[in-house]
Length: 478
Ligand code: NAD
Image (cartoon, rainbow, N blue to C red; front, side, top):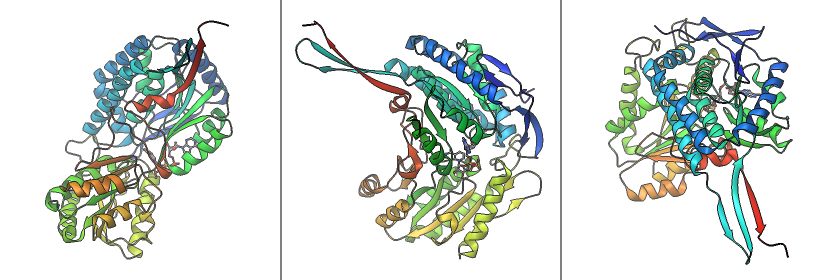
């Protein structure tokens, strides 16, 4: 039998409560499932001091030893998969199986970075005779990390993995709506023997915590995943203090479906991916630009798949899509659909809230959506797909590029020439052809344009958590 954890902050190697709490709700029924302690200024000061001490220890811990502790924590997370998935489903609403997959993915982030931390190579630069130049990568310092609510376990995992593998200490502020995923991570590291102060977990009013922590001297990197608006604000705060940033921001991903693919095959693949996590994914395929000759067939097969999706409580067997995570998303979905229809879009499926208890929204398809509709420029971050026709692959690329975002983009085609056009032309950090997988532990993930700065994952993932030091060494003093 699983239960939702008793919620705590984690500071200096200890779990702690505070007097003030926030209720945590189950989005499937709006019932209170936990009381989240809110950090006061004294808690944040304690976290800062602990992280400073933690950094001194951890940055001088051998990479192999760091790797061993991270791997042990990842093993514990895998062993606790059912407990963690239960908590994640309860606080976020996603289907239980997707909660389990999230735990596996989060563990993989730790495992990948635990390996990479042993390969954080520098280089030697040839110098004049008697002089050696050595380039080293050293941990940047204490990281203030801010993780969102759409993947309660794997979003914090990605940031904590990069920071700890690189030898940094972290103050993690995870999402107040979904705190248990991050708490399970802290518990696993506590049990794995991570030295006190290296990882600290706080919750509170996001703007108060970020504006208090970011100006502090100890904070050398701000790592944030969330909306472009908040990312810009935090980048501004950080730049006032010459603090580095790693920003993983909004998406609104385009999908160019070329005329040469079978629309009856590709439509269901796209629909199934669109409604994963109720569309609350920064890489979620959202704007489908489909070759005009295949447009009707693609749209019909997409709509059929969308209408077949079983929506319900993530803990019920057979549920394929849960509620959206909070009432803000529910309201945003209704407003975006209403606005699009009033601008002339065709509502081909869904479009309404389901029931009156829980934040359920129908898998929704809008077709022939004019550019004047808000949804053409605002990331829906929910279960709404947009399907519009295009005349050529070049037209699809033009449509794909017209927004200021560039996180993930997709193409479906069998033509090598089309692939080359997409690779050359689409402005994005991640392009996937004939697959809707956009981000893996072993590949660098991040955006261009307003989708952010920096990369997580791959070999590049640890670079942002380090600084480069050049050492020029003249062997003899003469
Ligand atoms: P929001 O912009 O208010 O918050 C997004 C995230 O940022 C939340 O986790 C929140 O706690 C945090 N946040 C907000 N203000 C902050 C501040 N001043 N300092 C530190 N953290 C702060 O919006 P929301 O309603 O929670 O989410 C909606 C939007 O956020 C979506 O439209 C989507 O674009 C974006 N989002 C993106 C991701 C992602 O994976 N890139 C995840 C969640 C939300």
